[in-house]
Image 1 (tube, rainbow, N blue to C red):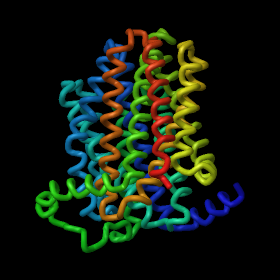
Image 2: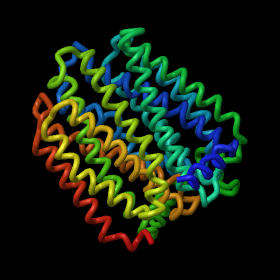
Image 3: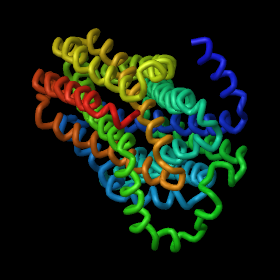
Image 4: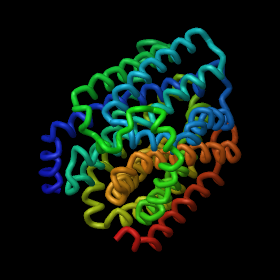
Length: 421
């Protein structure tokens, strides 16, 4: 652990890494604010009678359309300068979040609200994939695992903090989802301005790959997508890690819908109490993310990426039913912390495998595919949960099914461990 602390000090002395990290923190804090505003409006509004099917429909509207165009966005990401993606992407999100706030105030039609929210989510995928693809340009290979522990996890903590701030504003300062949306817009604007502290060419891709004209980039989209898929197929370690992480994301998504319904109907009588309890679950999950950031570099050093992912999946297979089948607040809040640690720990390992196995010219495409898999897994999990969950959220078959999927993931990782070595 002293070695990790020394490497962390060196990492934080890198000015470009700090600037990239600042963009991530502001951007993902805004994401957290925006997501809580959406959840509060869709799930916890007193006038809305939320069901698992309604939550699944909302997730599908927000995520599935981008899942169709996501790989094409990855091709563009490998041709646009990533600093410019962070600048214009966050400026656009600030504008779109403000428009979403106006739609809430005006009680606009649901389809228009979801279209606006979908646009924010779509741009978000450009930014997150770009942040991961840019990281090797500001950190040397020897500290990449540590950077992957600190940077994405710090971003997740920032999103959790942003969500907590949104809840605080919503419950105390202003009982208005529109005000919370505007807070997110301000943070997106801050992320855009912070990106200007980095040189335009710093974050890649290489100058020879940059095609400033949109038309030129779009004409090569199909060929670039096919090349990205072929490259990923050749990198068995990256492909296997992505498959395992996708399954764990599916499990996490199903449990998220269950907890939402429990907070809304089973554990509290008032919407505001349910929203506060959801905030506590998010805070504990965030603490799990932080713990994963501290623990994962040491664990990957001892066990390797595959070994650590196997431990994460196996632990979830055992503890998730032990804590979840009671459907009581305290055990499930403990589970929120543990699953936060497990999910983030596996993600750090997966990020590192993909970054080291995939060539830089393909990283944007592969990380966009990675993000698409996340979206599809989450929406698929919500759809399954909608079929299995009763109105109050208590479903033993769902808890058991998720435990089995975690166990299958752990066994698959053990059998394919040679791919990671």
